Image (cartoon, rainbow, N blue to C red; front, side, top):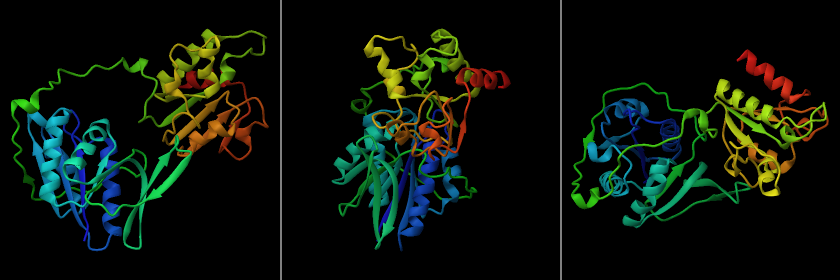
Length: 341
């Protein structure tokens, strides 16, 4: 009989992040698919009371918590000690956790301590013949592999966007608070604070509802025979600021920097979407000045609704790759939409 353990860590305000709530939905669904499986929840953080309330209606058989100032911040040594204690107390054979930077760093170490196995960035799973099978992307997610393991415990970190966010009712549940001794040896790493760029300087926003992708057409000659690079940059940044969208780019656009051409200073290969770039997950996507070639489109496989702006009515986006294609000048259309926003 399997014992499923859902692990989560609190955010700075004591709540659970979106990725954790989505992984909780996946854990609950897996419990319903595995016959006779036990289900437990384990949470670490400075104060876990709010997180326990949020997860209390998931139907878990047991709740475990490790809380205190030592566990409020992301630190490998203390996180590993807390998660190891929860895993052993729960008797978990399958451990599910959100694929946050904090857990992707520490869970492989916990798996090693417990003699288990770990797979990160899981993109889905199913139960067949009573056995758990997971899906995982390889080679920039151009290939999707399905695999299973007999080794236990099996640790899995689940990517964001795979499952809907948990939104269950709360109830009173008993919680086992575990005491994990922490000495100065485990506190050698000190977290002094967070440092982040201004919100308007951050163009990659995984939680955004819209992905705005710019193609190389923004840097080409326009109808008047001139290149309007500065205007294009201001227009794209203005749209991102008003809409809160995340910025993506075609490979041809970000490659221009290595070819000696004019490029946008706010865009790098980190923004690249497609066969050799990122495969983001957003509810909606808007492609502008991209022709919709297959290497670019493959990065949109997890976008919920696809739209594109292109002057060419016969571009790749119009060949069944987009839900809506606006045959229009991207400069004029984006300018008007920004004004409306």
